[in-house]
Image (cartoon, rainbow, N blue to C red; front, side):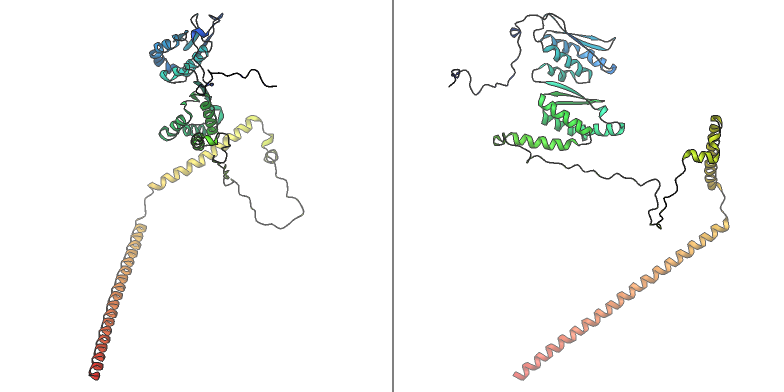
Length: 373
């Protein structure tokens, strides 16, 4: 049976964006004022106090447009936002909560105020607990920034998001799609996957979006697939075992003695706690004394006077060696000169032979001419 509800809708044209979020206005709030007050408090670090005091009038004016009240407590070091009787948008208090959260994370006030707009969200990514080693964490966090901040700028342009790397967190602002990509890139970066791979992928996707024919197709054939290379990180072992072939014996090797067995043999096992500590201390002192004696001996070597006879012998050896070197050099030079002279003489003889051959040819040619005549 055909549908009776399919009627023409002249107001529904193609130029209407059905996904657009319309701005919430005071007349849209038909329920009136809120029955209860909602409030959020955020603490901020001491170094942000001076900046927040300067910028607070700007924050107050921005929140007054939405009917949100705000308070800066410098004694406790906290910021508070709350709804008032003038508040008409229920989502405004949540945006105000995100605003004070971003201000506490060192985001500049003009940038943080953009969170009050529709379609702009924020995400604070905690990165410190993703890697245990402090040095590794610092290196991987630096990868997000890149040389002179170039990697960060590329990510901002491709995802249309604002990114701020601060301490143990990364604060991001922008559309939901961009925030999702940024979180994936940063988590992968802390898992030792360089952001440049994601940047290449985003650039290719950006170009593919321009082609309407590929809207309903899979883009896997266009995207790069980077193989993970697990390189061996084996170091040289501390104790290198002998792996040479030994004669075969059916009996297993003798069991190695444990620490307790060795202590029982030496008698250390039966000593008391104080005696063990004393023995360990004595052993430590002996080692220290040996090292100290070796160092003193090494220092004293510089102050030991050198025997003059030995010095004279060394000088004679050096002079004799230098004389031999000079003699060998002169011999080489003479050999070279002799070679050059020999080569010159050979060339001269060759030239003479050529001249004679030429003269003979010319005389033979003249004789033939005379005979013909």
